[in-house]
Structure formats: structure tokens, C-alpha cells
Amino acid sequence: MHRSAPRLSRILACAAVPVMLVAVGCSSDSGSDGKKNAGSSSSGTAGSKSPEPTVEPAKFADLPDPCASIGKKTIEDLVPDAKKKGGTAGGSTDLSVRSSCSWNGLDDQGVKGSQYRWLDVGFTRFDSDQSLGSGAKRATADYTKQVAKAKGAEGAEKVAAEPAAGLGDEATLVTYGLSKTDEDFVYATVVARTGNVVVTLTYNGAGYAGAKTPSSSDVVKGAQKAAGEAVAAVGKTEQSAGSEDAEKSPEKDTKKDQADAKGDAGSEDSPKSKATPKS
Image (cartoon, rainbow, N blue to C red; front, side):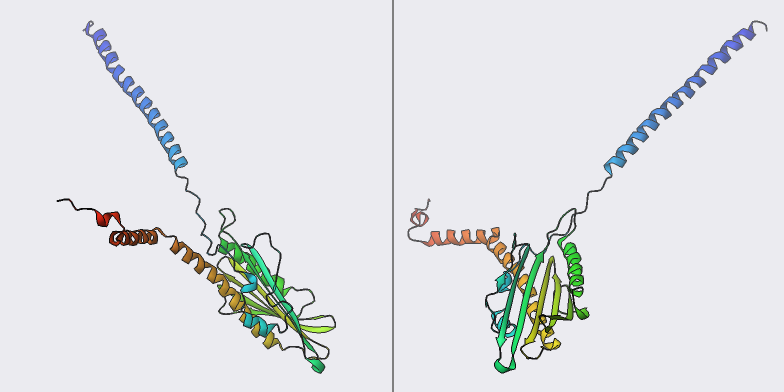
């Protein structure tokens, strides 16, 4: 019995060793797994960064000739005896971004006095920019600014504003009266946005030497007609660009090449037509 006691102690000591090793092994494994999980978590976070959204491309890449944007007949009706029938172009460093044209004339009606008329049209185009936003969004901001500018004209009286239907994506008509050079002027300004282009057109008139002041309804009617032609001129720039792209399309060039090949094959001067077929 006395000899078995030391032996039992050795057995218990040996049995305890594997338990400690297992415990150490488990703690070691959990540490490595924790590092792996932390690493994979951080790498997953770094790789989940989403790319910046691209802005919508601008609809119009050019502007129409401002002095040709309104028909000659309309100019004759709205500005009788215009000093320059073809209009006076405004200065611009880049006509594809900003352009304008104006007409003015004094229609002498003899003892009835004279009628003065002035018409101005301006175009502003905005490109899409990753940091500034789409061309349409930037044009919308400028559209709002131009409407506020028209409504806040210095010395304007009886200012009124209302939507102008049928002109681009959005349009506003601003009317007011203005006294200058001892005469009463009637103003109508139409601000319209079509895509990424803002069109601002102003038409006004006054009676001189005893002539009657033009009616507001006539001035508004003339301004809306001219604005409609100006907005339509912007739309034609997109159509012309589309036709140019169609002329340069690979499909059209391929068809042309095929037609030329057929023409050469049927021509008497074609080497292929004189070649002797192999048996």
C-alpha cells in the first residue's frame, strides 16, 4: 500500500499535462483566429468603398447662331425699321457656351409719332461636371437666377410673373412697366430652360412724340413668339449633331464599302472581272 501512493501521484501528474496543453493550444488558436478575423474585417471594409456616381451627360453640346435663331419675318413684325436687319451680336469668348443678339428700331409714323421697339435674346449653355453636377442641374440653377433678375429689374413697376407653357422644360414670363427718357416702356421677358441651355429673351417698346404706348398683351405675344423660335433653334443643334454622327457611323461606311466592292466587281475595268476562273 505504501509503494502504490507515489505511483498514483505520478499517474495523476502525467494526466494533468495534456489538459494544460489543450488549454494552451485552444487559447493560442483563438488568438490567431481573432487576428485573421480582424484582418479580414478590415480588408473587407477597405474594399467595400463604392465608386462615385457619374453625372448625366449634357444634352446639348453647342448653341445656335443667336442672330439667326429668330426668323426674319418675326424680326420684321416685332422690330419695324430695325437698324440692322441681321441683328447685333453680343461679345463672347466662347460662342458655344454663351451668345446673344439684339435688334432695335424706331418706326416713324409721321404726325402720329414714332414707335420704338427693342428685342434681345441670349443663350447660356452648361456642361456636365463631376464636381459641379449635370448640365441640366446647373442650368436649372441659372434659370432660377435669371427669373429673379428679371423680376428685380431696377425701376420696374407692376411686376408680374407666371409660367409660360410650351417652352422647353420650364419657362417663366415676367412683365413690368418702366419709365425712362420721359416715356413709358412696356417690358416682357421670357426665361426658358431646355436641357442644359437657358434662353433669356426680352422684348420692349414705347411710343414717342405723342404715339400710343404699346399694349402689354401685344408685347407679351411678340415675346412668346420669338422665345418659341429661339428654344426651337436650340433643339436643332442636337438634331444636326445627330445627323453628323450618322454620316460618320461605321455601319454607313461599311455599306458604302460593300457597294463600292459590288460596283468594282461589275465594272469592265475591274481586274476581278477579267480573271480566269480556276477549274
